[in-house]
Image 1 (cartoon, rainbow, N blue to C red):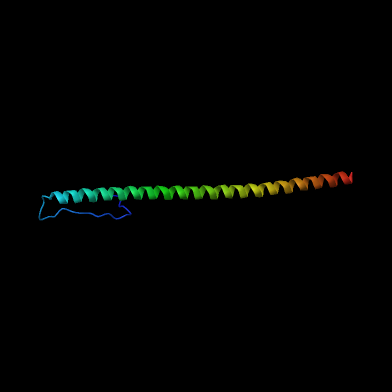
Image 2: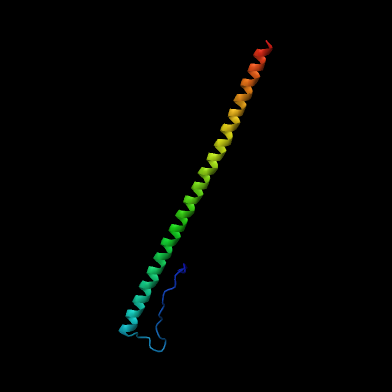
Length: 94
């Protein structure tokens, strides 16, 4: 059973008077409606939280990927410079 995060009034029928009056029936309907609204609000809050969490995770992953690519590009540039230097030195010797 899913319990709502937001509390709503809950009215129960009296055990001594099993036949509820019209006011009690209206109060029960209002309480049920309030609980329904509270549960819907909770679902919306949970969905919003999950969406924000997903966005934050994706932003972090994009940034992490960008930094990895930056490091790889720097390494590639370094190796290219090394190979050019070695080629230049070989040509110089010959």
